[in-house]
Length: 176
Ligand code: IMP
Ligand code: MG
Image (tube, rainbow, N blue to C red; front, side, top):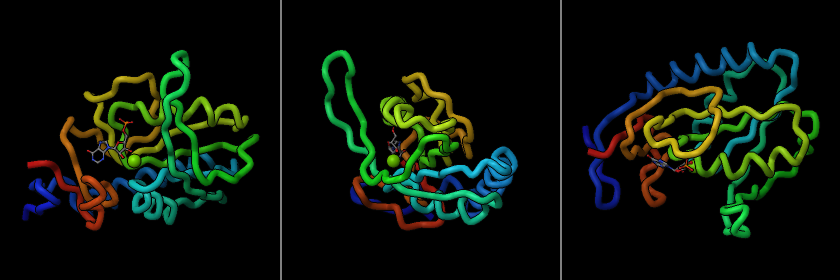
């Protein structure tokens, strides 16, 4: 069944079962890769809150989780857009960081944010995203864990929004 979010109509795209099965696979992979390494997961708000919650429940290795919001501002002409983290209080030095995103679209947000994260001397930084639109990627960005590669079409649901609405579903919908 299609849904209406504000002025737009969306059609079913990924079922709850498909999403949860994929998260189980991602969690098994990540738990194995980080065995004994005490990783720090960082969920990027708001979009990733459902994904981060469902993923983290299934991580089986000792680890911690925190959440941040990203704020962008125009830097000097040489630095372009600078992105800073709001709410990051953890000491990252020596930690293996796993960023949790809902979707990587152009890659602009994460590629602008990661340099400032690197200055905090983590042992490593990896990216885990539920969705990626490979055709939309415009920035140099290595995404290490990808749930679904999807076409370059706008999606909502399971935490993803259209102008703040449409986050509240267990399924993901695509613009009709
Ligand atoms: P990027 O910086 O272009 O990679 O964009 C990443 C951010 O844009 C995501 O964290 C989302 O908040 C938002 N975004 C990109 N595509 C979609 C979409 O299809 N639905 C909802 N939000 C999206
Ligand atoms: Mg987001």
